[in-house]
Length: 473
Image 1: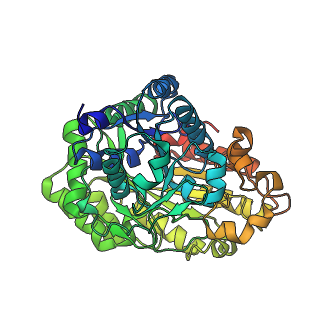
Image 2: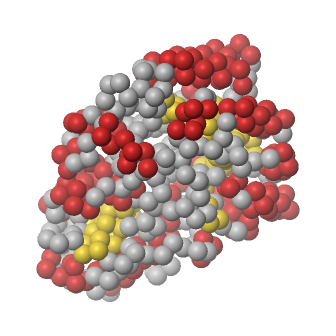
Image 3: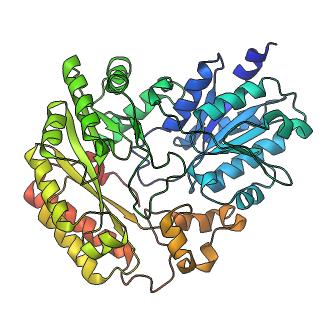
């Protein structure tokens, strides 16, 4: 058996399962598609296990556990998936002592190394820190020469930038630089994540075939609740050619497709870049609907109109709050009046404006909740996305308010390994703050405002995003 043959059969990427409220209209784990693509470049094929589809999830984990000899497992995890990711790692490590398990993503990156490794209890050999594509490629290359001896894990992978190795004293390797030119990355491997299944699931449950791409990375803004541990603050963007290539590939190879969602936070951070993408789509005469996210202070009439001409149908704005005092607390750098103006401007450009809102903000009052409901009914957005503000580890909000978190929900190995308690960190359902931090009931606020939104959509016949009503809180 050659080294490449060995890796073809023994490298796997796992997306831990989690009960998201948008589980019926999911977007794929693009991180896995990028990691698989970089190893394809060196002739190594990857298998994947995707917790988005739980029916075969445990069976596929069991198949990994049945493999003998050295195997390499990468687990990509958000904070909410940490407990499940560690459970899977422990199961694999117990079944195969020669396995090498790596965890990356926001989950292991946003908590202290000691906390994570204690929670993993020897099941995870290393953390991939920050952007993982080049790190993962180096890990795979070194794995080619790994003989399975547990006492050689640290020596085998020592020196790989962007990793922290588990040992009695964790080995913190030098940090890895951010990828300056995103076009150096290969096109994501859409087959390893079964893109067609995602498109078909959207079509079945949401009425449209939808798929996502990730055109840019990094955010230069300073909202206190945002985690930048993976992509950092510096805005980096693929070239218009590359972005249009990804869109065209979805249309020609994975279609029919109705909507391509630009899943990055804010491509309009650079309005010129957005306009150049639109021009590339127009020059190619590429006929496909697409949608994106944006900040309200990064769009203008010219850009919005050009987006519409190039096929954009919906723009989702992270407004978060509808009172200037709460917007100031969150460091959003916008005003309620600006928000009204931008929603109206978006409609005039023949685009549907959606808004994401937060409740459970420290200092929030019932008057703020009422103002939010009035704002929604008045401005008539096409989509209303709701979350409860949570102080996720790694954010400025966490640093400012960690003493206000319920003691039983403080960050600890015990919390991570307790599914019931960790579940309370789900920002779509509940708050982790102690009583008195705000004067509203987040659950009731969400129910009341979502009901008012639905009644407004019907009463005023508002054209709306079909995914709006396909959620399970």
